[in-house]
Length: 266
Image (cartoon, rainbow, N blue to C red; front, side, top):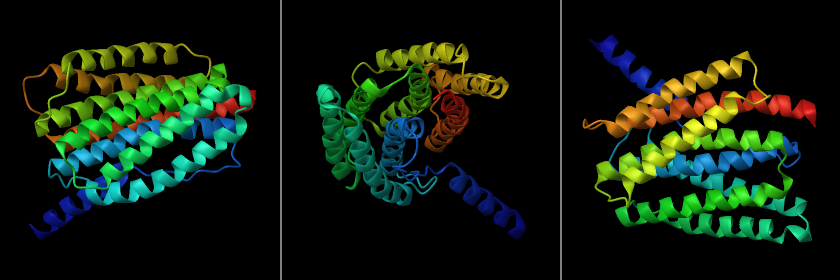
């Protein structure tokens, strides 16, 4: 019995460490491809922080969301400023709209950061959700003048990565008792967007056999979220969180393949 209990505790610790999100450091000397990818990662990991915030609000200890969120906020904030400064220097005076977009993204992050640091409330959860989705749009707009077709595809992997987290966050909010305006319409749109992006990525020239296999795996994984959305059964929070993290790891592998190919072409 003792050995079994020890095995279970070890397994839980392993899965916690495996799926807890890490904020990768920013390298200002890296290539545009790499830092463009990091900007996309900012968008996805903002949704992961919201997920951790919601898990705290639901009193879930799965993956130690309180500890992970506290660490992530500090690292994310540092990287947000570095990403902002990196692209700001590369945008010219004629790219004023893009520069303004990065400034607006930073303002939304700073406002959200204050709420993420506080004890979770339902009202703040909705505000953070709204802020971060707006921030993502500004981060996309900020890099638009520098985007090449290959970089646009890398950006598209970010969208594929975020959709399961967004569905998860909406579901967690509903479990918490938060009413989301036009919930069904919003989730249906997310599902449609995922399949549209998946189709585009499956047909692009940066693919190899490994990335195509991973895209099919991501498609199969996404079926869980579609079933979850339509099911009358209530899903437990930590299962949703783990499934969203599983997808994140799959898409990161795809993005790595695309980055390597894009680097060769630049």
